[in-house]
Image 1 (tube, rainbow, N blue to C red):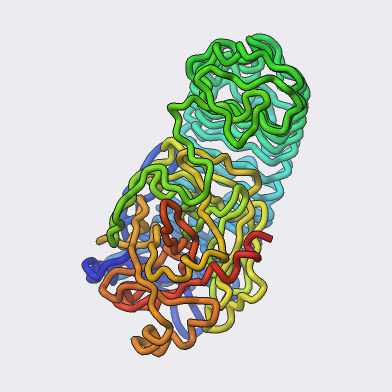
Image 2 (image 1 turned 60 degrees about the horizontal axis):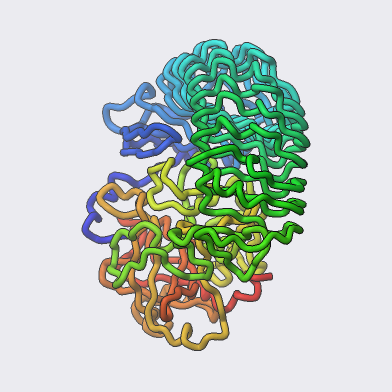
Length: 639
């Protein structure tokens, strides 16, 4: 959300990109305040940054044509970041970056079709803190690549074509805290590969081709908190495989081929809070397998082959509150197992048992009477309908921060690097609606790939990566409406649907918005509201906590009389709304929902599409905004 109050600050934060031609030299560096929350720590620092645009010409030549014109008094030594922000073909990652800019702290070259990495490419970057080579075509990493980079804390080589890693790759990486290797083709890792990484807190090995788990990988990872092994081909978990991981909080093993569990598989995980084993082939739960997991809160065993639940299947735990047993083959269940846990949410739909309904301070929802289906104690308030606010907000005020759980259908579209870029609206258990231009911007041929988008649900504060309720979802598919045309000035059909890779679990923090095109009251509504994280405030940064803005719907004639530019933007499937008084949607609000309230329910009426530009603010908040009319696309969204 944007206000004119902070207009004078915006000039100093305008981006400057490299666009060198034979006739001119690039000026691409600027100083600005950057705020980012990593998984476990926060940085708030001023940097000089270079956004590489290598769309034309060889990137080495372009980089060498930079002559140090970084602003008065600044030199190559001031540059701390190198970022490739679009899909460009770089092919080879060489030493040119570190030779030119020896004080680099961040190198981010994502989706650039990199295939080769020179062994000495990082040798001069002694201060490198973060390296991201996400979404390239890298097949091999040189063993001595990181030899000189003793301060590296963050390494991202996901979505490449790696099949293994050299044994001594991390030999000097004693400061590394986060390592992302998911979506490669890794089949083997040396036993000592992670031995030097004593400070590692996040390790993602998911969606590779690993067939087994080697306990030797983890023997020194005493500080590891998150471990992702999902989406591999693992058949068996070795005894005490994770015994060294005494501080592990989250373990993902879903979507493998695990057939059996042993009683000591999870030995030593006394701090584990989340364990996901869904979508495997587990048929039995041996006694004691979960006994020592005293802090376990969320256990997911859905989509397996379990046939029975015994009284001691889950041990005795005062912390286990969420248990998912959907889509198994359970034919018998001992109700006494509930007495051994603190389970408040138990979902056992799509099983074959016929146990009678529990009478012990429970309720059975959706008229399902079998096997404690969706058991919940009455003290837990979880709405099971659409468009309901768990924490009603009352009157909405322009630019006000929302309360926790007020609008549980809002979604944040994130890049894999953790950067927010657009809003969205949850409309079902698998679909999020957003703007097409968030996926394919005007004037661009390329679209974002599903692997380049993470959908964050259940959040309240983007800067709080460990807040309760927030869940990131991978995207399985992206459907842009066939009428969207990025090469015209019109914003007709500016709508896209993101299909999530698995069903959303609805709770206090996550609920879908209502959608209908048959209720005439929705069309008759003269005002609605937008909740978004768009840029605002003195720093011109995305809002961490979403803000809500009340906006009246205007006639097309009113908006075109205000500014003739709207004649190019508006169509029969859009509408115009806004106050025209210095408060409006802005960069980052794109894709967010325009909602109307009827009774106690909220309905999706539109999608933030386009606003008039402003050379200082980036958007003209004294004008109005264009919204995609969601009512015209209801059937397409649901298809």
